[in-house]
Image 1 (spheres, rainbow, N blue to C red):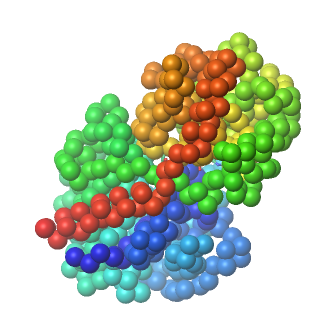
Image 2: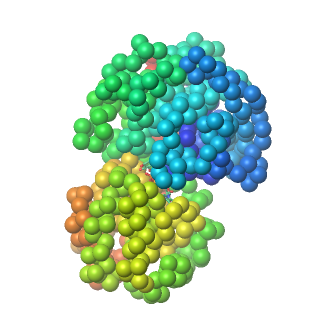
Length: 493
Ligand code: ADP
Ligand code: GLC
């Protein structure tokens, strides 16, 4: 078997063009790391309205391209760009599906009703593009429910296609909480034939489940941390998918995400007020002051500043935080800032917090990448009380920025943060087990008392955290090993 492969990544997000969460960071960074290892990777994503064609010098590439949706052929155009790492990114233009504000939902967070059709179209278009340009992939790598159908198409429609027939299918689950479950009528235009609408494949309590069908057909499935891979084999954590993931046996694995340290590194980050390193943390103090100014907080270098950057979704446990944060602010000498958007009740709650705690609490409801960098650099501790967390990237960014994570010990949070040891000063953060407001309160209290009373330990932990490396180079090697197994599975070796 050749040691370098052709790989197609098909996904609904990719940094720097379109992002709602960590999926985009992964799809932006993994191909570059694979390319460094000698593989040829292309990325296919939608051309959303929000992508600025001029800013990125996006060029028309192919038009028109016909894509079969059930019994009808629909038409789109393809644009192309090389990303910063020299990876070719193809953008599928279809006004009907992608020329609207928002990736998945409108401004009120109502999901677009045609999401299954939009992403089935993207997936079929990506495969059609391979045929049209003669790109004969060894691996088609899909991400989450949006593109999970790729594995089914490869095993059905394209099984004997000269370009696609040999490709192994690989599916990464970034979040099992989103499975793409819709009324069965949506199955029609997938063209996947009703014979496959069975309870081991696509059928899910009478509905169609895109992720479930994708899992069935994929030659190999992974998720984004070893602990989440174990957790999702249990009924409590798998949102109904445990039996199907267990059926995959050895062909379901966990591979920890890496970090793009060209984007997230306080030594070179162009977005933050001052750069710094583990040998000279002066710049971190400046970042803290500037962040305090930006949020109208009292400027005080010695008060512990707690930060959150998050989608305001049930997964992230910020409703639990809303039950703890006022006690934290009432009882402890701390400051707090939050950047996030999502759940409307939580948006209202956190938007109002600064009014109740002037000078001590700040919030920005919305999406702001620059501010995310400011917060990583400017706060002392980063809070992630997630109910579940497949990997989590912000806590890993925090480590690099010398910002100690306070996290629930779940999924990738448990894999990347080492518990503080009060006896030795060891560890890189503070972990708790129970998903409750109480646990958040007490663990923040533990971190705050360490900041004030065991300052030597705190400073050691900051330096230790900044030394940790979660490099994409290592994770890419693991993906290569997993691709090899997928290719062997496909060939029946
Ligand atoms: P998830 O993908 O579940 O949202 P991750 O921790 O893997 O969680 O990744 C979240 C990514 O999205 C991080 O890069 C984070 O900085 C970014 N992010 C989340 N919310 C916002 C926001 N409101 N503004 C800017 N960046 C955000
Ligand atoms: C998902 C998960 C998050 C993970 C990200 C990238 O959005 O919620 O934990 O880090 O995907 O894999």
